[in-house]
Image (cartoon, rainbow, N blue to C red; front, side):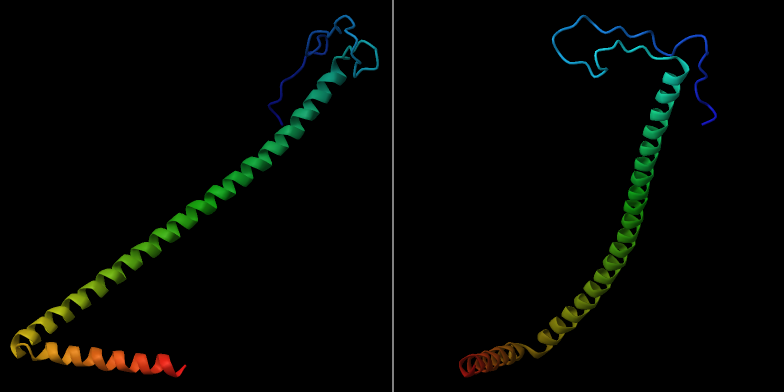
Length: 135
């Protein structure tokens, strides 16, 4: 990266680290006091930072791809829901017209249509019962 922090070669990046007095625990540095060597220590830290930065960049790219996918899915779902809403509204209009015509027909014929419907329900019920017992 071109905007990295430039380290002055005469100074260390961090103050010298002094191991506290022995507490009976083992040291990861093999019993030696760890004293970073300025430039080498800064290069190691910068390398670690670059590795972490690459990992974070990959994670950010993954999250970006996921959010773009979610956004596309939301757009597609919105379009589909709008089309379904239009289709249901059209179907509702068709059914409303059918019921209006049926009510007009029923008013013109009086009560005779009710007997036709009762007859059709009884015939339908008879066929269902016969079919059920023949299985």
